[in-house]
Every structure is written in structure tokens, then in C-alpha cells.
Image (cartoon, rainbow, N blue to C red):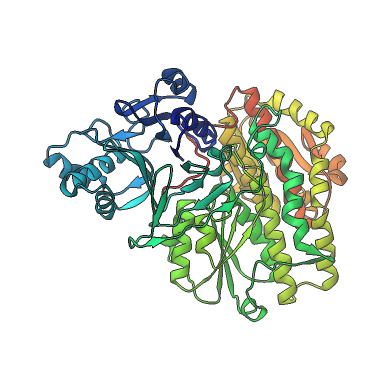
Length: 613
């Protein structure tokens, strides 16, 4: 959601800003703009639509000379996508320019105050309030740093800001609160960005700014201040992954590349943490005595990460005998959850910056619950705020629809489950060792699911089933939880109305929606419940549904007796089966979206990282 890039140095800023914004397109956006401090002062160009439109308008940046500038890709919240609502936003007097990621909750109150003082507004955004508020305080104090401090004290909400002033042609100010912002250290140049790929071409040295941080910098120096205005040090970290990891590498889409990345990233996530068929999690220093006191587990997340939690409920309760409840992060604080020091809350987020999940984490900590984050981004806000953190090592995920992040999050749940089961002695040692051995071999099984033969079959079914208006996913137990993610993928990128139901719930309402030609995707890999799922398939077929069934290789022939079409995955340890099942669902959604002519990597109205509530 929204992307920020800023540059101060000796090179022409505009081409660097445009290149950086291109690396942030995955976050989702509907307009883009840049502002450079050039010979004529602050010069901004912005436009609705894709970044290419901005490249054309600026002649790839040549029309905006200058060595300091800010850029932005906007995902509309306040005001429709338009040239006027695009960032950067200049103050009414043209003195201040701002790019902003986040939401200012009290912007109407501030806007009315500014209008009463003679300020005119030229957009429908909350961001324009920020540039005008800073300009107001600058006129009062004639001190830019103090003006920014005074302004942000009056802001309620979340923000990452890049700020330029017409009267300081070599200086930029950056501020962060509850929205992601990193600072890049170069050789005679500095950068700000919403995410690492935007500046990785220029530097590997970055600092993840903390809430309340302010950076004041020129090409030659930088000063950091904390929320109290005190000078602080922000030591850079070195990014170890290659820029190629955030590029398509010959694949037509990032989503397809990331589907095929899954065996490798699962090895990175799993193999270092399994030794001699035992899980070793040195990252979690909770003592056995603390873990043995855990009486309840909450799994708090959004979107696909929440669906990982739905799978995790079955796995944790079966293996660890602890009541486990997945809960949508945006509802967590308002559900008055029962929390205490014997509650473990798992917070799952790919970006580590998801606003609702971060707010829920702070609520859990306030109520003394134990908190453990599962995130992909080192140094992210959720990673820093939690008591402990487990990284998924998925590398950068660019496609809006998650694939490898989901799989590595689920693998991390397996690791936590087996670790807890051994500490709590809720599984026999031979069972734990068998599960660890199977988990260690999971990447190879995922690779088998991506064989050309299997993919060709899925492509065929996508090419024949893509024109359905509605789809229903049904399954039981772990399969039911996997249906949620399969359904989400189809609606996210193929724009097909899709719902997921526990198969046993069909007769309690959903079956009324089945009519001749309706597409039903049934998952039937939980062997003890296979016959029950086949009975549910017969029910929908009796109403005219067209059924595509996903099952394990050993059950293929039985499934063919009932379903119209069958695709298979290898059979694996029952707890790990969801990791294999999701692969054909990802690829089916991908090829269905292609057949429908959809923008696979940047589906409409969606953002990769949701950093506002």
C-alpha cells in the first residue's frame, strides 16, 4: 500500500526515483508522482495510472533536473485516483512538498483549521493537510525542523513521510510512525524507501527506522532523532539477498516465479532448524517451564496469513493439546480476548508491517500475553515489537497474491508445533522424529508437485473451467482450512466469485446456491474422511455441479468414480499434507487468471502490504 522513495546525492534524482518506484509497483497503486528540487524550486509531476505514464510525462525524468527529490506510488484511500490526488502534495504556498504512506485520522479537523487561516486545498486527500500544516508552522517559527516537529505532534494516525522545503534545496526530512520506512546509506548519497528493493540497486546498507524517528539529511550528513527529539544512532544492517530475487528471472510473472521458488525457500526455512530429527529453535528462548504454563494460543493475522492460522489450529490442538483460536487481526482488539501471562499469541505477517496485526500485538503485550511473531522481513515493526520472532526466510515476495510466504509461514507453524510437542511431551518421540523427517523432506515433495506433467494437467483444467462465474471450495478438517486459501487465490487474481465451506456445512445453506454448471473444487486428502467428502461431492453433482477434486495419489482411482475431474498430490505425513495441497490451488488460480486476461501480479484494488487499518 503506497510506496515512497527519496534521494539526496550528486546524481540526477528523477531517474533514480522512477527506477525505485518501479521496484515498489508490487505494493499496489493507482497513480504516481515525483517532486524534485531543481533550478526553478520545487517541481512536481504526477499522473493517474501506471508508472509508465509518469515516465512518459517526465521523459524518463529528464524534464526534472535536480539532485534531491521524493517519489510516490499511491493506493487511493481519501479521494478517487486522479492527477490532483496523486502525491507528492505541495503546500498552498508552494514551500513544502510531502509524500505520505498511512492515514491521518484527524485530517478533517486540521483541514478546517487550516481553511480558517486562509489555506486553499487542491485535492481530496488527507496528505495535503500535512504539507500545509508544516508550512503553517514554518511561517511561525522560521525553523524547518521545529515546524515538522510541531506539525507531527498534531497528527493522529499513521505516517511515513518524505519532506522537502523550497528554502532548503539540499536537505530532506523523513519521519516514521506506524508505517514502514527504511533509510539507505550510500557513498555521498542517502535514500529513503518503503521497502528494500527500491534502493537495493544503489546500496545494501539500510536502517529500519523506528516509530517516532526523524532523519534530517543532506548528501554529506545525516542526523537521527527519536520521538522525544533526542539525537540517536541508527546503525545500518547489510542486505544479503540479491536484487535478482526481486526480479522475474525469465518467468512471465512474479507469481509464477514465486510458486517455483517454494522448494528452495522451504529448504532455507526448514533445514537449519532440524537436527537429528529434532526441531531446534534457538530463536525462541522461552524456557520449558514458561511453555508448560501456556493454556491457550491465539493466532492473529490477516488474509492468507490468517488462513495459515486456520490450518495451524488443527495441527497445534492435535499435536500439543492446547486450545488454539485463529482470529482476524482487525477484530482481535474489539473481541475482548481473554489474555494473561499464560496465553501465547502468534502474530503472522509477511511484511511485518501489517497495521491491524501490529495494533493487535500491542494490545496483547499490554495484557501481559507472551508474543511470538512469524514474519519475513528482518527489522520490521512486528519483528521488533514481539517478545520473540521467527523469520520465514522466503526472500522478497513481489506478486500481490502470496504463494511462497504462505508456504514458509505454514512450515514455520510445523516447526513450532513439533518443538512445543517435544517440550510438552504431548507426542511420542518416535512420532516427533517421523514428523521431523517428513518435514525435512517437504521441499522435495513440493518439487514433485511442480512437475511438468502435473502443471500441464492443471493448465488444461484452467483452460476449460476459467469462464465460470462462481466457484465453491469444499473439504473437511485440514482440507477445509486449505479451501480458504484456495478460494482466496481464485477471487484475488482471477476475479471469480469464490467461497469456501466445510463440506459438512453444505446442507446447512450453501447447497441452495448450487445450480447446473456451478464449479465446485473439492479437496479430499484426509483419508479417514474421504468417503464423507465423496458423499458431499455426490450431493452437489446431483444438483448439476461440475466437480474438480484434489486428492492424494493413492486415492485417485476412488475419487474418479465420483468427481468429474481429479488432480493428485503425493501422500505425505498427515500434518504436512496442507503444504502439498496448496500448490495445485495456486497454479490453478494462476492459469485461470491468465485465461481470463487478468493482471496476475497486480490485481485490481489490492495492495501487497496493508499498512493502514
